[in-house]
Length: 99
Length: 156
Image: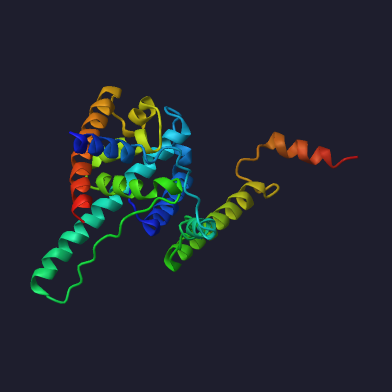
């Protein structure tokens, strides 16, 4: 009987042995380990490589657009030779030059 | 939970990295401490599962290789335990190590960390009743294990 009481008392003591326990403190180098891990794991900025063919295609397209624009504005802005110019417009233009 | 200083440091690093990466997705449904506890518990369980797999592989290897070293885990000593209770705490952690995963987690959070049962339930994403039940079963199992340890000590 006494043995059983001793055993139960011992078990209760063991179960309560973590009472008043302090929190574990981290070792000094753990902060450095964590910050190193954060730097290593940081997502790297993505650079998208554009192949040379796509660069060439874009350049040709831009050039074509520029040529078309030049041709279009040249055709529409030539004084007196414009197909859209009406006689009234020509008279107005002449009159503007008379100061 | 893992009863290994090196593993605890590795897990601490992983937890901080996960918190840093996932903080924007934290939806404030629980407190931030609960959220961090949950990440930590899951990482501990992942590491313990991986360790168990390694042990099983090691066991099979040792069947074919007589030179394979069988390493027994040394008894764990928590650095925060009061000096006069260190020996008893060692036996307690030895007994805790034999508990199934959920019972171990609940006992450590509720009894060792002394968290309220409501918070333990939130961390483990289970009901308070489930926490009470797991804690009760954990204590019954611990008493059985400590009873064996008591007999072993008496015979030494």
